[in-house]
Image (cartoon, rainbow, N blue to C red; front, top):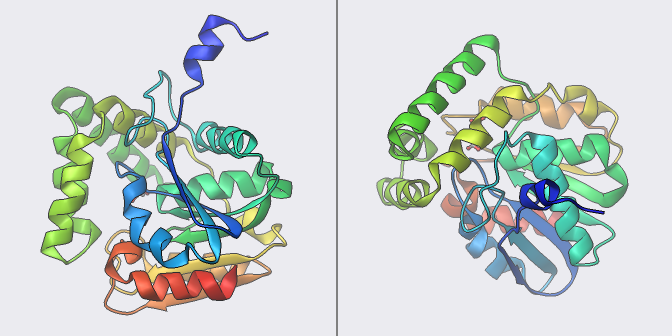
Length: 256
Ligand code: MLT
């Protein structure tokens, strides 16, 4: 039986669902929301059933208490799959969403047809990065989502209009959701061994100009996975789904 505390900690996730075909679950990155995938869902709707949730604490999903570890967010996605009666799906994650996909590859490979790491990678934070992240999350707690909008926004892409659009999304994200997801990322483990042991397709997509995830990190992730494939998109930063949607949609089409 579920007690009150348990029911409070299980958030309701807002999600979009469009199209018919193989289930493709698309997870957005840190401080963003499901709408970053809208162009991809539009392009793939004839081949795939595209499901894009807002992760807990982001977008229009509930903002529960506690740190949002990658495992906790992965369990939210499993619950969503159960609700939609999906035994398996291809799960692609953008940046932090990719860390969530890796957590599923570690603990629930049977529920996956494969994973996509879109501008993402499999390494844990270095000690320095972790300390910086924890400091930044203290600033978010004190001053709000504007801290992340100003620090992350300009590093997402060189396209000024897109930077403004992403800052608007981050500013609308609950600061508590940002803080808890940031602290969750700080706790995550190295997943290179997970990739080595995951014998299902792994699509790694990198923007050649990504200012957040270095190309070498994408390359090593694709090489570690026995069925890994790397697609590098030129003139593209951390947001390939919005900077180069046609190229990314084609990569998905070939892969899924
Ligand atoms: C993201 O875009 O999801 C984050 O920047 C990833 C990270 O900070 O590691």
